[in-house]
Amino acid sequence: MTVRLTEFSHGGCGCKIAPALLRDMLATVPLAQTFPDLLVGIESGDDAAVYRLNDEQAIVATTDFFTPIVDDAYDFGRIAATNALSDVYAMGGKPLFALAIAAMPVNTLPLDTIKEILAGGAAACAQAGIPVAGGHSIDAPEPIYGLVALGLVHPDKIKRNNRARCGDVLILAKGLGVGILSAALKKQKLDAESYSGMLCSATQLNTPGSWLAEMDAVHAMTDVTGFGLLGHLLGICRGSSLGAEVVFENLPLLPAAGELAQQGYATGASQRNWQSYGGEVDLPPEFAGWRRNLLTDPQTSGGLLIACDRDAAPGILQRLHSKGFARAALIGALGTGAARVSVR
Image (cartoon, rainbow, N blue to C red; front, side, top):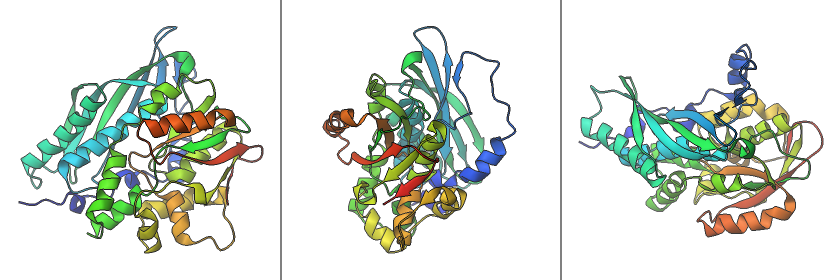
């Protein structure tokens, strides 16, 4: 029996609640200010919580899960696990172990398919050098898989999303377009080469986050996932009280992403993202809709977005390229002004 997982799904990191609605939902949640060892909580919408254990160690805790963006069960498991581990790396941490989260339609999805999803997740964790030490599962209408990921970081080396400085440049470590490619895949319009490129990117662990944590020249970091490049960059801008400029032509794209965007492929989440934060973005006159869709495209297991000293950028880019992040590129800069993004 051939199973197309995407037929069970409404869409990967595009399943995220729209950013404006999420902010409203969290507005009344009390901040954990009475816990002085909670170094990072919900206050800045960062990638993970961080809790200080002692002067040398803090624990990084996060969870991430979603519905399939690909049809192959093993590939789905690998992508979902890689995506969850990315939040630990984005804080500058190193993963320690993971717990699996699995919600599966057990009466309609073959058991062998479910096993392959779990095996793919375990393989990604093994690549990161950590075990899947347990988890939780339920019966559900559509397949959902992900991880609780736990890691360690030195309390003085945490890379938050709200510590960028005026004059910092912005580096994006992976190409954009995962959501657009997955939209084409669901309509069976994605060729094998483009699928391979998407899979390679989405299963590439964001391990550079660990060594970027050692660099004083790196001031802020996040990973680009369901809110798209603009959404996650605006998180840096709001938290750091800075404006940003992005040069569209400098943006790295996954193979075929630009062409498919021009053909009209996009996710529903891309439009929801724009509705949530479009009022904080300045676009050039007559900016094409397909270009905007690349900027708001929800990324599943996307790249690190790094704010660093301009002088340090060439060395960081060189090291990223040498570690297999061939599309890493300098895409813009941060400056004074309102927390907005200007695209040129």
